[in-house]
Image (cartoon, rainbow, N blue to C red):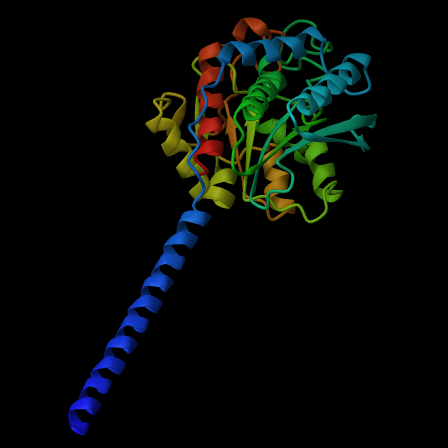
Length: 341
């Protein structure tokens, strides 16, 4: 009888132990599942980019007049840009400084910075330059007069202002920073017909982004990556994969181009390679640890290539800005944000 009781007791102990083990395993699994569910961010549908709104943002900048540093038109437009970002819920900083142009002129520079969801640790950065060329050095007339810069300057800014508006309407899970760099287009005048000569005084370009890199306005700023928009408004624009972007952020570039093609914009985001292009992303990649790609209209052509026949001429006006191109670029940028590439 004692042996039988001992046997029953042993069975009970094993059973209870097994139940406790099962319960512990179940609780452990439930905690793991709960943790996964808790950590998984809810999916947010990508909003539709409004190309009409973006077009109006481009036009508003052009209506100020050429945004050449040290002019009232430049200052007025800068104040408006900062106000627009603040209106859409971005914590806004205007980084002011003085930089010296290749002419020897001292330029009063303003980098306009907006941060959305400032507390978020995971952040991505978008940027464009907002100043305009102070002379039409590629034109045949009025070469010493500033250009409108509808495509070269205003288009990238217009797209990002519409992105900011959409963010204010449908809040993404991540932090988004938008930077409008100043004094990008005050570089040395070309000395011949080859575009290669534009880089003969390379560091005379992108003065605002160089200043930003040397004088960080946000301590310990370290976004996941950055995307630069430059000349993204012309009809039938072509955005090749430039060498600087490929070198520093090739994986990101391939993901963005693949997403663009899947969205139906493969005629803009082409699988065509170009050489190294000097742009704001060049200095950010070289001077910081932030990987940045450039979406820029450029037509590879032999050893030189070109940015369009209207580039640095008075033909860079509202007549060449195409809503379909703005839509393509803007929709891809929203996809990047809301699908968290």
